View 1 (cartoon, rainbow, N blue to C red):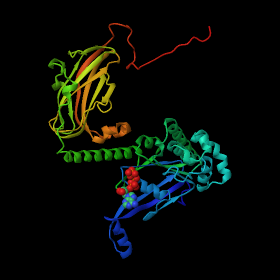
View 2: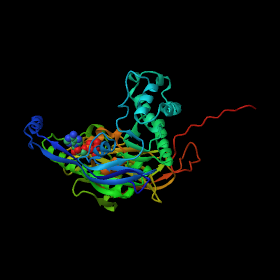
View 3: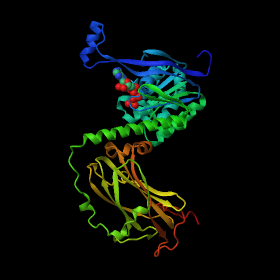
View 4: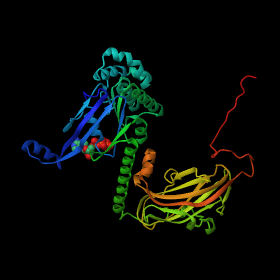
Length: 458
Ligand SMILES: Nc1ncnc2c1ncn2[C@@H]1O[C@H](COP(=O)(O)OP(=O)(O)OP(=O)(O)O)[C@@H](O)[C@H]1O
């Protein structure tokens, strides 16, 4: 560290080992008898890196990889078993936001308490207090005891204090997900500003887009060990691959564990009583089929009709098209997910939705042999011209359908196990509307629009 004045964090061979005990009383036994009654567990092993002023280092890793352990060591909350971490300058840590707040004190008073703890003089804090107040944006609550705050206000104030006190090092652990979109945008803009001013940032997150945006290098941890150190894209890829592998392992496990659960009945009977005739269905042998996992599911039919259930291959702009899919599940399955993509002639996907996104309600835990029918109604508010259709099937973990609102796009893509993809399974043409407004819209997709006009003055 003495050799390079720009280095503000220098971690050398950091390691953290815990004594793990099968039973709580073994811990006491070990202390009393002074002999090993549990086993050693290395939560972090041989981690070394440096971060310079104005640099952001991303730390990625699956749950339990050792990220929090590393951050706690750097924030001074945990002592490493081996190695050394040296940090130069004022460290602001967003690890446990607001944990230093005194409930009876007002927001303003707590800013002084926190600022002093961070090593600022009362004059320095007083100079920044209005900036912090404006950043937190909690109106009069700033002058009220923090025990009266909502959890959102609490976090906003805590973030404002840490971020506005000109830290030399900012340690961020998923904290950017706090508050509403406006506050998040403010936090992101402030991070940009801090980096420009020379603050070094350590960013621990599952949000790979944030890592891509801010970080110049990445460390990926697996089982407490560094498996990648360096380039951002390579690190992100390594991390996402790991996430996908874990998801697949989870699927394999549940597949075995659900063998005794009851068979799902044919739910499609009540909902889709008028299944169309065979002329509606495309010739599947003409589709380019790319198989994912061997033998997961078989597509028995894929068709397209008008609202009367009659075969149709040309539709007016804005008319509803009915896509039918029929498949047989060839092994027990956690969450079968179907997807339809509509492609223009120049291979632009104008529509790509999965049954999860549209809450189609394919039941979880389908048993081997289950026969599924689906009908998608899509309003073709798209440009005139020819289109092709791709039909995809994948398996997802059961939890994904239960918590779809919280799933990020990265998670969505990485957790799916592809089963079958029928590329160009069918085609159709969109033509100008025959009645009503005769001028078709010119863009690729018709977006719902309202326009208001007011005459002002003469
Ligand atoms: N006090 C402790 N005693 C024993 N093991 C611990 C202790 N604290 C953490 N661990 C273990 O150390 C490993 C690393 O934990 P850590 O919290 O650092 O992971 P993480 O990457 O932050 O995970 P997450 O993303 O889930 O927060 C885990 O296996 C965890 O169970």
